[in-house]
Length: 188
Image (cartoon, rainbow, N blue to C red; front, side):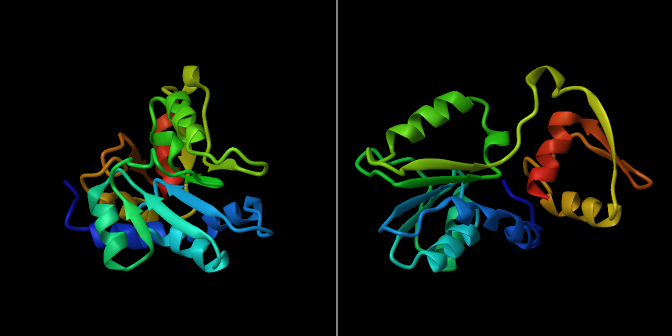
């Protein structure tokens, strides 16, 4: 269940769109496309992709029914909350800030690869970061330039994956496992 601060949390996430726009550099513009934004959240990136590629059919998928309902409410294209794409294929599949939340990465990528059209230029574009599995539980301390904003963001996340991350804030530092801090920074 999402927190009462859900709308504020979504706004902060959407402020991060400027970083996600780098995905567009990898999408070809010289032909008609069918694009899937996998893990689309509230659909803002999906909408932005559609605005930059008006001849493309752009769809979004998210496992969170609340996010998909929000995207649909804002009338942002075609959105799915169930993986019912077997009859569909895509030229481009985009994952932005998704892979760090996926346990079975190889399985997901194999599945998504099966949804790619069998033609030159079809690809999966990932904007995410990874850490080495053997180091993900090591404790790290990160000095923050704006700790109050980071604390506010985590509080707004409430009872979500980000809100429940085991991270501590003290003075201008954030402390937690490398995995937790990475997950927080990928969303923040």
